[in-house]
Image (cartoon, rainbow, N blue to C red; front, side, top):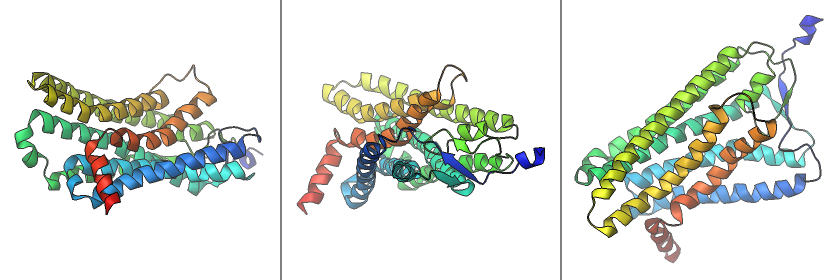
Length: 307
């Protein structure tokens, strides 16, 4: 009987944002609009940067890579969530579940390192402007982006690989709207302590290392800006950094709450809200944070429209 109870689950049920049937259609419409805006905003920014020669600079190369990572993050989660809003069948296979987490985890880790690269770019541009063309060559920029994506793919692959040591037989319900790895640990019959520790250690190390690197870069930038004699120069330097700092604050604030927090004092609804903000809202906001007050992007868009 015990052996029968330990049959490996090959399918899971995503409970979604809410179990109430009433708001499903309104939620579908809201998140469909959000997803379409997210895709247009991020992929439109990528296309604009590729199309306009004036934006072929390191800063916009990194921004385009960040926008693509945001599009991947949103696309790994939102389409299935939209399907589940209109379907009574919320089943997801083990393979699809792992694939969803892999794409999400890769994009999230990549974004951490791209934010570091963008902070370094601003540090060089403001603290060493004369050396900027040499220090931020196209070759180096491509390598930094490549390393960011490679680390993202590797980090996610480690955790997906370790999922194969677990047996899922306790329940087939995942109390989330996507295959969140901590929720998978809760329904494992195999002791997930090793997996949990590695997720917390890797997440804490990556987040703290990247966040501290960004803060050190911006501390140097801040003091360099204060030394500028021109008020116009200071204003321009602050404006180029403010969008990135806002994006960093939203991104890391949510990440720390999700993965580097005490185990008690939060509910499943809290988890869903943090996950929702991180997987869907931040990718929606980022293209607007970086574009709305960016004169170069707005001018490039005007040039494309006039053509």
